[in-house]
Length: 148
Image (cartoon, rainbow, N blue to C red):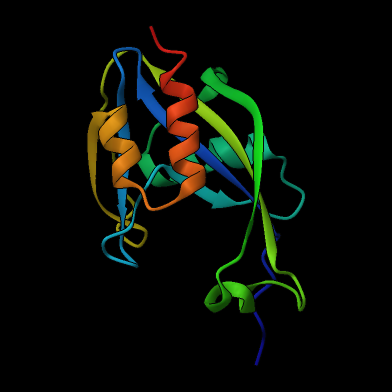
């Protein structure tokens, strides 16, 4: 029996919003009530920027291109115990790198049904309330403070 490759304990968070202050939130397929921005682990040999662009496309169908903004922030958080088996033994923390994609207006999104079931464009305050992730909440608030 072959084992799946171990995940890298590094990931990206990409907050997508409009210049008018609407934030894209995605509802995960599992767990059902979990809302978030675009997220995903870095593949082997992949930089955070490459992973961010890939994840945006895989999860939304949007092409970030040169519009992807590195927020030059990251967060270290404990990996949920139930998910640690995906990582090498004794790996307990993940480093998440933050990016943003600011669009002129809302866009239609093509979800990957294996990952997400629904999306909404909502104001920053609603997006921050909707997500259960403290890193996602902090990134939304930080980005909202720069929109004018």
